[in-house]
Length: 133
Image (cartoon, rainbow, N blue to C red; front, side):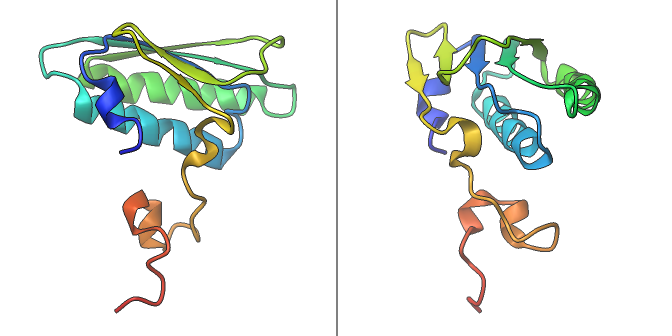
C-alpha cells in the first residue's frame, strides 16, 4: 500500500532497480505489479517497464521469470517489458501522472518472509504476525 495512492491514473510506469534478479526480488516486483493491477482503472492498459542489471549467473533465470511475468500480466491489461542496463545505480519509479518515487533500497522495502508457509508470503500486511493467535 506504500505506493498505492501515487499509482492512481498512471498508465506508463518505469521501474529502475538494478537488483531484480534473485527469487525474493522477483517476487517483490510481482507484489508491485499486483498493486498496479489493483490501482489501475479496469478499462486502462498500463505499460510497466523494468530497467535492471544482471550478470551471467542469474540472467537466464531472470529472462524466463520476466517472460512468465509478461504472460501473467497481459490478461490484466498490464504490458510488461524489461531491459538490462549495466550502468544504472539509482532506483526509482517514474510515473506518467507526474510522480517520481525515489527508492533508496529498491523494491526491497517489502519485507522478507519466513517462506512459503508464512502468511506474510501471501499478504505483506501480515508481516510480523508470527505468534499472534
